[in-house]
Length: 370
Ligand code: TYM
Figure 1 (tube, helix red, strand yellow):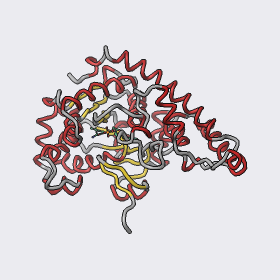
Figure 2: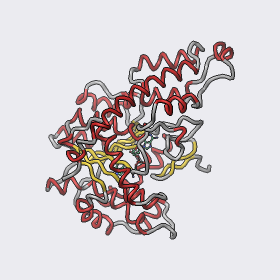
Figure 3: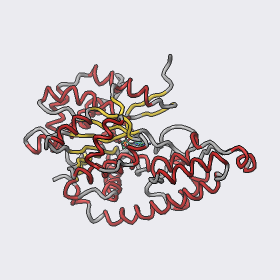
Figure 4: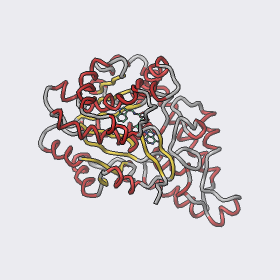
């Protein structure tokens, strides 16, 4: 049967079937057994785990083995700076911060201004500028300054180049072509690039002078990088990096993940209250044609982009989320009211985030890798 969806680092489209993705990518479901084990270390689970927003992993059990044996792991995540940060990007970052707090870990955070220069119609100056802008969002998330090391690829190439070279020697063109879909017409920069995104998997081991377990929290679109990373790791004498994968927060339209390429259906951290209002008021919902019909037959939260916003990000309280779900289904809560409540929540969140972004300008140096 033909595949109805595509997930690559540069394209996510169609109706996603996450169970199929697990099979296709060869990852494992984050099941109750492993969640219960995690709970022993963290206490109450993060809502993104309770709701299976983080749903898949590779070797997360091994990360816990190592931790229990007294070997601390390091976190690695990143951002491709092709524009302003949107709420979708914050999904893995909120969870990464929770892991950093619970396990008191170091975090390596890569900004791939080189990648975005190579794949988008943007100048290198623009992508590096976006990197510096996105760093304000990263700092605003509240990561620990002493334990967070931000790498901007073009500025900190000295940290990565030697590792990237070693990685690249073990990756053939036919492998990266098969994994990433490169063509003969692809520029040679992007063909080398996977070794730049793989390099931070091994940087902590290089810096510490001994092998360090690395856990990568990210949405599942980044997974193609980690398969070759894991193949190469033992050849270079490193541990294989482990992953924990999230689903995608959808856009405010009818389908598709939240994406900067559809700005009217994405909420950016730099949006003003009037943008937030307009975008949410225009959002696709599971409502009926008229208020009367909705009161009578109820709405459909399962297909509603507004409900998904509460679910993925803006309502951490399971009880309150359930109330929204049931009130929608029963027709007690109409779309207008539900949207207004969400607007309030998003405005409040972004007002605070934007204040922290402003303050972050003075702190950038403290976060850049030394
Ligand atoms: P980028 O900038 O496309 O995405 C940054 C992070 O956000 C995740 N993401 C989403 N998560 C939930 N819902 C969405 N709608 C959504 N859209 C994006 C991505 O999975 C990613 O975790 N090449 C990378 C940058 C990078 C990186 C890394 C990412 C370099 N090293 C290590 C993760 C881990 C990129 O362009 O990400």
